[in-house]
Length: 313
Image (cartoon, rainbow, N blue to C red; front, side):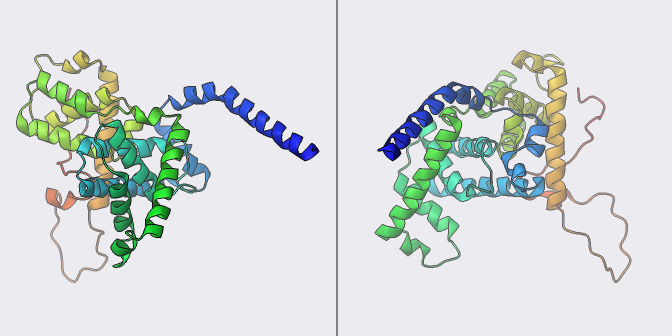
């Protein structure tokens, strides 16, 4: 009797605590923008012993996985980008050390299909994800169609979906991407097709990074147009400070573009082949490596330019 009363009281206490903290939880999870320092030094994964390079590698891994899974399911790039942002946000609340990224990524894509009104059957998501995860196993495509294996993996994905929703207090379903503001900016500025293509490629690349955790979509879109125009040597807008028309200050624009240049440079260095230690003959000095050598994962390749070159503003 005493045990039953104690158990009942503990449950009531838990429900009261949950109700008391719910408003603050909703308020906390509505904040999906972080400083660079918060992302690099104070993420949940950092507290569990995962350093920044490893966390960056894992983020790249689930983005590549989502891209491949989305293409296999024939969903739009917008839905894939939405799933990437969901994962980025989730891992600013939960640790990569405690939550399998393949499960979370699969659940994110399933949720993104719902958020973007692009129906995709759960069975197709489960099968495609399993086949990609276990692609090294020739029997995986047969095993996942067996009832026991299918239901077991499906329950894992559904548990991941519940964890995503619980962690975000359902705010994950409200994801804004830079695509719409980018399209609006390009149309308003009458951008040339080459510039538009470069801008779209940049936005695809930014969604693989934590840039979407630092800046709002319209800021990323505006800075992307400016960056693409710089690389294309194109003039956009009827006024020199055209970005002000899109609610972006000059100071903020410079800050975002600086971050973008850093991301491009980091990827360029990662894509270059390692230097050879032993050379059997003299090699003439090369001023710059060919641009195509920098074409690697995950960014599209553009020639690097000095950030403080004359006329960039």
